[in-house]
Structure formats: structure tokens, C-alpha cells
Length: 125
Length: 107
Image (spheres, rainbow over the protein chains, first blue to last red):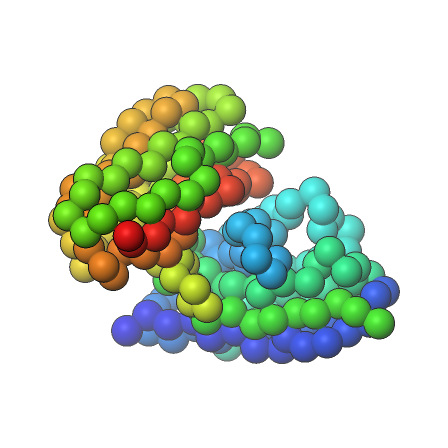
């Protein structure tokens, strides 16, 4: 069974830092893009960042650029999100998700599956 | 960024009803569109990918259609376990973006 499990959430003061981890199992981790998606309390889903299979490409939503860094360690089947300069608006449940890709005639389709159970990050003084 | 707009924001329907949720993209995204179901306190679950492909293990009463800018998720016969919030998501470009969600309640 493919599984991803997040950890590392908690309470942090504004301006502080936190590092989230995501442990993957049941899949060949190094062959997939991976993403972080967050959900503020009572709100919808917001994609945060993704990273290519070999770590050579990263993408971020504008609101976290320069503050968050996504990384991976394929030898440990693990994904990370380093969050610096945290703000109250970063308070959310953070989900790790595998991006499955499928190609037809050079075009690529991607979707998120599975998702982890999420880890709560609370930014508050 | 591509904006995704769902309608309605919420709905209440009876068991056995046919339910339709609409998702509109701010620009053409071909069929790069996925649908997820989220139940309270749980992670989202993939239902439909590439606009119309049913994820393995998802009941056949769920179906997706559309291309370009307009998409539809249909539940052919609503069941009690189908309550929750449904999200569309585009994968045409980054940043990946989601619709605001449609909350489905059972009457």
C-alpha cells in the first residue's frame, strides 16, 4: 500500500521557523514529483510547492517564495518543507501528496494521490 | 495563475438524487482537471483525474466530463456516504490551483 506520513507540525511564533517531513512507503519514491498542499482552518485547499523526481526543479506559490524551501532525500524516501519567516496566515494543516503523472503524445497529466493525514502548523504568539 | 471557480458553493440533496457540480477555469486547461472529495477532519481523496478518468476503487456513480474551461462532476445517485466537500484542481500549469470547494449535504 502506498502511504505518505507527515510530521513536524506544531506551534511557532511569528517570524519563526519549522521543518516538516513526509515519509513515503510502498512506492518507488525517486520516480515521482512530490507536493505540499495546505488548508487553513475552515478554508479550501492551497497548493504550496512541488519538487521534481531528482530534486532539480522546484516550484512555489507566490505567497511562500523566498520563505519556504522544498527538498527531498530519495535515499530516505523523504520529502521536506523548510518554513522560515512564518506568518499568522501560514497557519494550516499541511499535506504531503504524491503527484502521479501520465503522458500521452508528449503531454503530461498530473494528479495528487495519495495524500497524507496532514500535520498542523500554528503560527501565533 | 489559473483561477478555478466552482458552483454551487454548497448544496443539499436527498439520497438517490442526481447531483452536478460545475468547475470553470479562467483559461483553457484542456483536460488537465482533477476532482477530490474531502470529509471533515480527513485528507482529500482522488475521485477523477484527467477530467473523466475514474480513480480505481471509486464507485461508478461518480463521473467527470468537460474540456477547455468548463467541467462537471456528476454523482448519478447520491448515497449517504457522499457527504463532504468536493474540489476541482487544474494541473495544466504551476501553480496548481483548486476551486473553492462545494459542500454536499444529505437531506
